[in-house]
Amino acid sequence: MERAQYRVVTYRAEYRAQVLEVQKDLWGPHTELNAAYLDWKHVHNPYVSEPLIYLAMHGERVVGMYSFVGAKWEFGSPRQTLVLPLASDVVIAPDHRNRGLVSLVRKAALKDLAEKCYSYVLSMGTRPTVLMSSIRAGWQSVGSLRPVGCTVTQRKSLPHLRALVKKSRLAVSVYRKLCNPVWKSQPNQFDLLDRIGDQRNGKLGDHVSIGKAPRILEMTRLRSRLDKDSRIRHVQDEGYYAWRLQNPRSNYRFLFWDDAELQGYVVLRAAAYLDVEPIGVIDWSATSEEVQAELLQAAIQLTCGQTLVTWSATLTERERSILEAAGFESLPQAIIKYPWVAAVRPVREEMLNQEWRLGDQPLLDIGNWDFRMLHSRAF
Image (tube, rainbow, N blue to C red; front, side, top):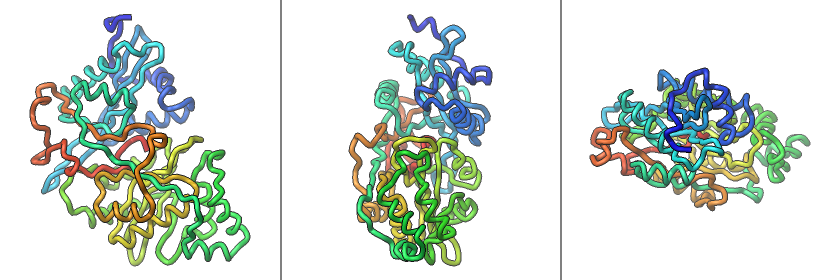
């Protein structure tokens, strides 16, 4: 078939069933879950007025999709905000591959985004074939997001978990299972963490607690106290957390460190359906090194036998030192699904040979960014 036999259209509700069908190759076979994910990610996204989904059509059949997701970033001093869409969900039906459809749909998408007055688009991790195609189409790498991971295979009990073990036979049974996990046969990787939390009413000690729901107002207040630098980062206000943590393909758990008020938190993410994926430390903030280290150790202990992963490229030296001391190290390719590389491109062709910047901040310098796993819609 020639490319002339294809056309590109923007998403409309009438294409919904066909989009869900073609996306099974990328999202998996669960139609109901995929429908909820489509709605959350694209239809209910708070940063765009309509889905930025572009479809390759062969006749009346949807045979490919290239989408962008609304993402609002802040930069400079004083702070300014701008929506820079994230590339997402690139898929072509198997019987229509190797015909240049990715580049065809991407070109049409960029033209439409330019007409909508967007300036740049971003990518944070994609399949190798799509990444190489993007580089040839003018995208440039900002740098590796440097995923690191830690797998605990030996029992290294926290004092309050040892105390819990002494208190009940049920707790003993649960604790032993922490180092003999059965999560690979269960859809909830947090099953054991939840049992420990339920046994202790969420409390793991004087300061650390487990939550199944975010404490959004307190988390945003803490971030406002801590965010002092002028790097480019995703807006993380109450509206963002309220939407972001509703991803139906993910389960989240929260570890909090309190005294008179919240002093730190960790957000953990696992797949919401049966899958063998590492647990992500997707957000991690605290007022001190000691609080940050204690939260990380609690996360490690409560996921014993599983692999924890996070991105380290734009963390502070203090945060990287804490990770290293806890046993985090570079991950083998077998564990990493995609090359986690941040990339950027202007939407207008005439910008390709100019310097890319927001304000006075060059976009190709990774030191100007704060990338967290939370910012990717993949988690």
